[in-house]
Image 1 (cartoon, protein in one colour):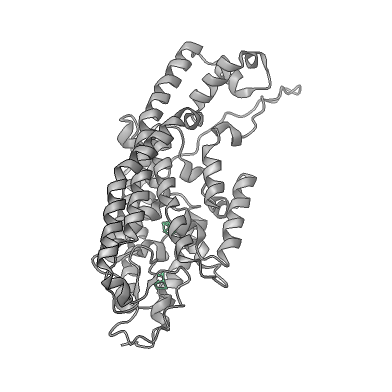
Image 2: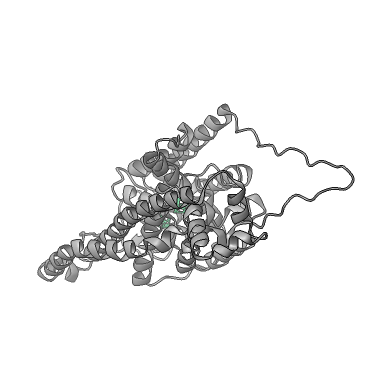
Length: 414
Ligand code: SF4
Ligand code: SF4
């Protein structure tokens, strides 16, 4: 599924653009009504959304850490799905807000609202304090997947870890496309927004249904293997100050919790053999750490070599390439993008100049993106050789969604 998303994101924007038709000429004298743009949502309601989000985060943190109630977390998550998912139709959404943030940094003309900043920051701040409580019961994308888990299978650890790198790759690409003003690909390929709005392009509905069907057996596939905001939450949660614990008191090593987590997010006690093999681990750690600059260089080189291809997702670059390579399209009355451009007051020279500027932005951006992907790959490699001594069963702070299932299974309840 991550591969499918990667292919979708790399295709030129026009691939999925909607077919537009010229307005018909009515013989009856009927005139088409003027196109109106809906009023923006009143500011008070926008701030209301922030307060609701804050409320969900506060209550979930309390339920996960103090009250330790899986049941109440579940009910709260249903509330979030109804409010942020079906009522607010998946927008405003923390998952996509990272794109607004980065575009506002790269383009001074783009202003980002306080609401978007709050939606971006609040889940990260809470995750830094209490773990991924946002994923537990405030993110409609996560909740809709959580509710369809029927018979979760165990994903082999190496598969889980390898696929777990994809959200970082997706995040890097999303930032590249947002920073160059090309597209907000996280929103464009959000698989669940069509379900929340009860209508979307056909391929998105299919994507959403596929994720939900897969999610019946591979729990939360979007969260674990795709979500770019989840990548950020994973990093912040690793450093969380307080985090949900499986047992409220002492772990009695009964292992009952071990199979309760559908996401494979419970770490087992570290085997002595692994703890004592310090020499072997240190050698490999040093080797892979030394390789990181090389991986970054290779990543930057490979991606920057594809910058022309990547940049074609930008409408200006796409159109400039089309007009230069296939000038006959200018005579094609059915090509509405070309006809719209020809009807505008921009010249081809201006279009080509704009495409050139965007392409050079893509060149720099794809170097940085590739280097970031190389860095992630390197950190992933060295992380295999960092062993923390654990004597009890514990939630993995990065991967745990604070859903509370394991707390329910633990026989120590006080
Ligand atoms: S991983 Fe992403 S989609 Fe899943 S719950 Fe967290 S923020 Fe939402
Ligand atoms: S709370 Fe427990 S069951 Fe839920 S994701 Fe975290 S470790 Fe897994």
